[in-house]
Length: 438
Image (cartoon, rainbow, N blue to C red; front, top):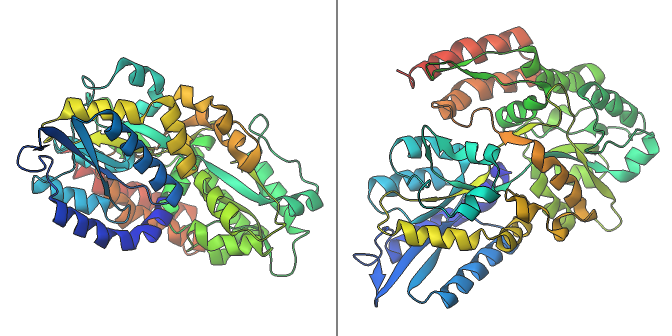
C-alpha cells in the first residue's frame, strides 16, 4: 500500500515543504522549542486518507487541550518524499521532534545516529503491549528506534459471486489454501470467467516486497545472517514458491493476467469491479477503496493469503513513530507517544487507516473483530505477521532498486528463467550488500 500512498500523496509533498519552510522545521521550534513558556513539539504525520488525518488531528487536539504546557504541532508529511525530506532535515538540524515513517525506512537513519534510542524513554505499559516480533522491526543493533504501531497483512480480495459459481472451497485463517491449492482454485475459477477474464490479477509494480513478504509463508528467507553479523543472499526452494506460482499462473495455466504485472493495487480495482478479475492479492487497507468505489451490488470477501511450510507467516514493515536524536524534549515526546498509542487511541488510528494495530489490547477491541469488511480475517492474521525479510539489511534499498526489481520483473514477464533469477539475486545481490558490510 505504500506505493498507493506515494501516488496519492505526491501533491502533498510540495505542500509539506511549504509548511515546513513557513513554520521553521527544527526540533527546537522558536530558538529553544519553547513559546510563551510552553514546550512545543513538532509531530510530522504521514497520514493521508481523510479518516486517518482526522483521527490524528483529533488526538493531537485532545492532547493539547489536556497539556497546556506541552503543545504538539501537527505537520503534514508525505509518503512520496519522506526519506529524502528527513535526510535533508537531519543533515540541516531541522528534523521534527516526532517522526512518522515505516520500519523499512529506519535502518540508515538509526545507524546514522539521527533517531533516539527509545529503550529508556517508553513506558512499561507500551513496551509490554506490543509483541516482541513487532519490536524486532525497529531494533537495529542494541537499540530500538521506533514504535511499530500499525501493520498491514496481504490478503486476497475476491468477487464472492464468482467464487460461489466456481464451487471452490472458501479458505479461512483456520484452514487456508496452500499455494498448490490456490493454483488449483484459480483454474476452477478461470473456468467460469467470461471471455477475456482472469481468475487472478497480480499487481506487481513493486514485485520485491510482494515476493519476499509472501515468501515467508513458504519457508523462504532469502537473507541469511552469519555469526559475524554479515548478511548474504541465498535463494532456496522456499524462496521460489511464490515467484513460481505467479509465473505458472500467467504462463502455464493462463489464470492470471499478464497486463497487471506493472500495475499498482489501485489500478486493478476497476477490473475487479467489472468482472475482468475474480481475485486480487492486495494489502489489507485497500478495503477502504473498495468500500468507497465498488458499484452497488458488488459482493466481495477477504481471504487469507495462501499458506505453506511457514504457515500463514508473512513479512510486514509496520508504520512507526520515532523521536529525533536532536530533539531536546525526548521525554516530553515520549509522553505524547504513550498517549497517542493508548489502546483506545491505537484503535482509532487503525480504523482511520484501515490497518491493524500492533498493540495486543487494541487487537481485542470488538470493533476490529467484526466480520464486516473483513476486519475479523485481518485480526486473525495478526499473530502470524513477522518482520519483513529485508528489515534490517543494510544496502537493501540499492539491492532492491538495482538488482531485485529488474530481475523479478523479467522473471514474471517470462524473459528469464528461475536459474537466471537466482543468479542475479544472489551473485549480483551479494556484491551490492558486501559494500555495506565492510
